[in-house]
Image 1: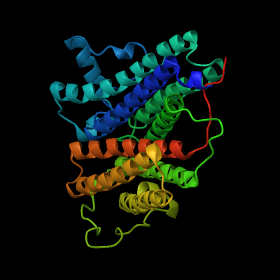
Image 2: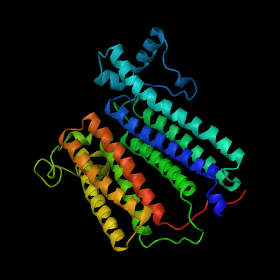
Image 3: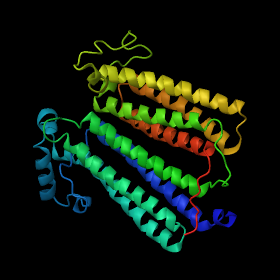
Image 4: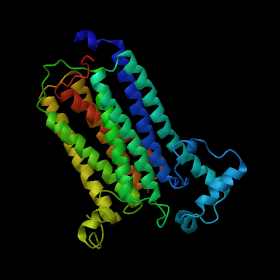
Length: 350
């Protein structure tokens, strides 16, 4: 078994998977930028193959622009937009979609190579195929999200935006966990540490907070109540329950959505500190201690970014950094959980 652990081919698999995770993190960040720049609806058709080729001449650019001018976002918000301005938003969305296509290529081709060379055990091939299919599902969900903004809305549905982000983070987590198993294999007898369940709860809380962030983004809720710690002098938003039925307010009332995001941020801060403190008391060492320190540090940084983003009415650079740091915090939390979790080997013989 130790010989398997030191197999350089298996380590290469882990590094490849980390690279895939980095591409996904980059896609999530650029996806946030497409929303912040209003670019997500600039490409009104989904062509998984030929869509990789952008307009190559003036006639093709005019055709793409003409299609955009038929959707509500243009007619209600961007009337009079020039072709040059359209190109500016088009390239953001095209880059986001191109990364998705490249992700499929940089996953599938190396996977075939590693499987043929035996670096990926035969028993692990279905798992890898599952990851590939999950990536394909993410592309479908992305188009399903875009469709919601092409007929009657001027932006995509906040529900579909949250689902799109949620699937992306699940894919990121699955890829990272698999990479950890290849790069940091554990002895078969390794048992879960006492804090493993707490670390799992923390990862779940961060994931939930990211979904709330997507609801906030979809409702443009960061553009209101731009004070902290109060909400324009109050503890809670004005008229938090004006929608009927009442539960819709959690998803469609911008003020309440921002309030929920703030409250869960406080819970994340408390949970991160409690997890870090319990780790110190349990005398965690090595990677378990380092990952716990990273979780706490990123949590503090993320909350500071969130406050600055809110106070400055969501400038693009700060908002993008806030989303990227959320991905980093989720990844650090998952690493911490892996270091505390029991063994699960991926190195079984074919």
